[in-house]
View: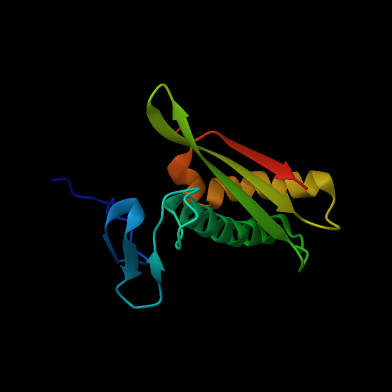
Length: 143
C-alpha cells in the first residue's frame, strides 16, 4: 500500500472520489452523484464510454482553463469560440499498452505566434499536462 504526500506548503484544493466496478466493461460513479457512467471496451460499440474518452474530456477541459491563465499572464484575450479536440490513442506495442495524445486547438483570430505561446504556457500550467510529461508523447496542433 502506498500513500500520497504533499510538501508542507502544499494544500489539497480538491479531491475527486469515484467508485468503479467491472473494469473496462463496468461502471463508475462519483461520490457526489454528478458522474455516473457505463464503461465499455474501446471500439466495442457497446453502450458506455471508456477511460481514454474520459481522459480526453478531463484533460481538454483542464487545458482550456490553463490557457485562460496563460492568456492572463500574457495580457491577451482568448477568442470566445476557442476549442480543443483532444485525441487519446491507446497504443499496443510489443504486447504492452501505452498512451499517445494530440491536442488540436482552435484559437480563431489569435495571432499564431501568440497562440503558440499560450499553448506552451498552458502545457506548463495544466495539472494533467504536468502528470503526463515525459510519460506520454503529445503533439499540440494549432488548427
